[in-house]
Image (cartoon, rainbow, N blue to C red; front, side, top):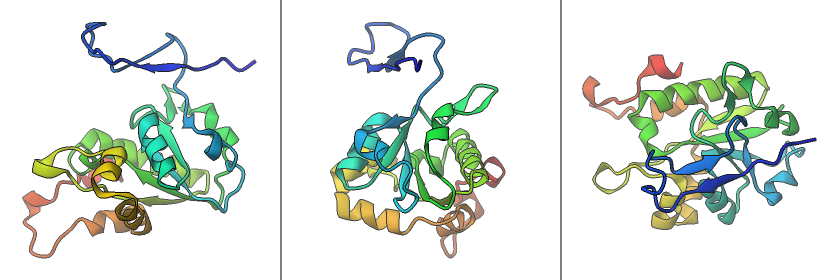
Length: 193
């Protein structure tokens, strides 16, 4: 049978002393976080999906009226050295619109950019119509996740960003501003493409 998967959030990070925010059973692969409401539409390719970093962010997006799938970190869609998680087998992706919404540090973190490029390629291989949305940085350059953005800006602002999501090459071009100096462009194209 299917082994149950449990992931626990640690409130007191000093309790374990290793800096872990979450605990899972040793030896189990990551799993996708899929709410009951999203689980019900996994076979309906007419309903778009949003892939996001983490369970709490997926729940926040769900409360805003979208169907989201939470990844256990930006590489949480992969089994180490084995490809995509088996959970993807239960999602009908061919022809489906899928939006990737990583945290705002996607703009500056080359590791997150590499993960984005890999996820885009994997979803496109499964024939999904993949779009990328950019969350803005927070006040004073602070990193924002979808949950933070929803709390600060509200569902209407989030819906606007979802509507502005574009295929990866166009999404990258969205970030380039007129008269921008080369050093101000934070995306490492070699990481993503």
